[in-house]
Image (tube, rainbow over all chains, first blue to last red; front, top):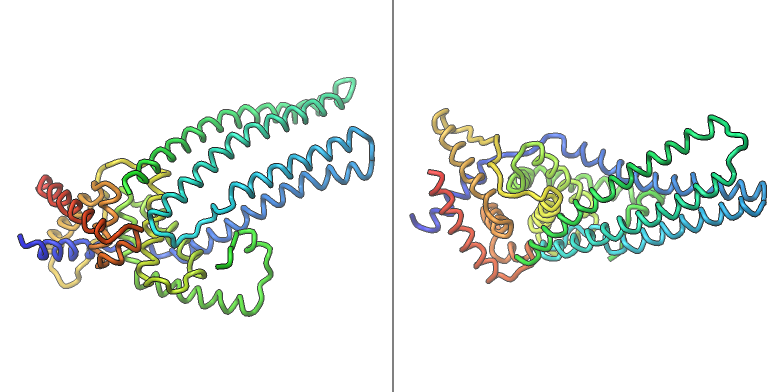
Length: 185
Length: 187
């Protein structure tokens, strides 16, 4: 078969395939709202944790409460500083060519792996400090309502440290695949 | 170029000029999707082997277009701009799914209102055969051949993929050879 004829035949066959979901515009608007909510939620968490501890320290300025407030704000500051550092340059400039975009994805993947390590350490530091603080201030004699939130914390900790290695493995596989693509391009 | 983050979108106050801009962007977005929707759908289909994945990818592509549209300054053609975004999203999608060569996509909508039922069936089968064969190509060849089949020239393909025109030529030669072999095996 003539080469150009072959191409024209393939082109005709390829372009006869029609695939367009009808509600794309609505989906985009919904997803855009969701993305904005995600950012707002991060800010809300910061305010929701930081403001009450600072307020408590101002209302009752005892040394241990001030320490709790300072530690909480330090942790929040470190978390935000890390987040801003790894997201700098990692916002999608979607019109990059494919080669540059693969590099961009690799950078983002490495940033996410760093975030996993950072998250594990931050969580451990926070947990150690918070539990030490809570146990030191636990009511004596023991009150039943005091223990169930702590049980929840332990459960959340177990879930977090099960999730983290799984997510880490997933990101490593993603990175390996992307490095393979980078090599090919 | 002004840098833009999602935080800006939350914190900035809308002013009338922004609202007008948004309306213009929405108009552009609708027009681009109306003109290029089928082509974007085909490109999405070349990255996935299920209809639900294809629709998810198409949604991601549409979102990326929506986000990037405001920054588009006409440095390249609209088609090049859209196909870049589509292929970039395709790569990101594959990285997440770590897709390997799998079974061809099950159902594709193949239409030609002028033909009769038998001819339609034959056309549908040949189109599905081609789609399946393209899906089996390695990503770098798949990208080049789908862009060629969408009617892009070597220069435009080079712009989309960020490689030289001679590299495009080499990839296309190899892609066509592999595609020919795959199609022969299917017969």
